[in-house]
Length: 271
Image 1 (cartoon, one colour):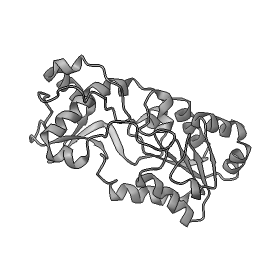
Image 2 (cartoon, rainbow, N blue to C red):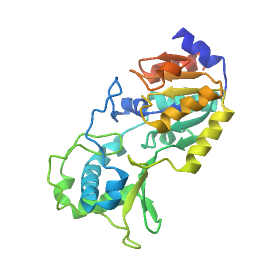
Image 3 (tube, helix red, strand yellow):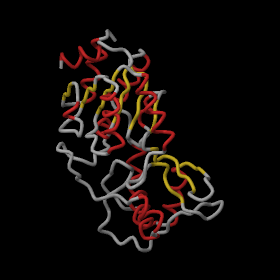
């Protein structure tokens, strides 16, 4: 811990990349275990969602049940510590792989939602954007039997109810043009928008180092931040319980609670 704090306090301009481990203490579980192994039902891919009505039925049946858990989740001490570190000028930018919006709800301002957000929905044909909460009202009215279900929450407001028959599920269409509605999150099989990735890369170029908090970095969209930092000769600090894809190139790594390390960082700078 002392070596970690010494590295953190030696620089004053960190980019922090957060993953599901930061939201875990808010009751939002991770997709992978401590070994980086997938531990949940595979989510609907972007390609299937766009091509198959049945895939959209599966997605919205799960999402409708999981949404109620997502809106109840509250920022935890890790989120609040990152807010204070930004206010102190120690964190220049926060890039999150999470889609729950908890960093903004906690008060962080310089945030890039790398994988988007699940609290807004857009039409894939005409681009109409609307709040996800409005979709929930429609879903529950059109699918009263599903609205009574209780499922286990997943990181993207999904729920594990695949054992149920969702063939009669009514799915929402765009109220303007009738097109396909999709949450504003990067689905599996899709890519981070190019401009968003470039913005995040530019922020890293301006930073003194990279902190990865609560991510196994098994997806390339997160792992490439470590590759960029390595190419730029900048320190890479990993805060994660279990192994990550970047263990071999990290400057230093520590397990345990992300919140505890972030709080110790604040204490070390006299806050």
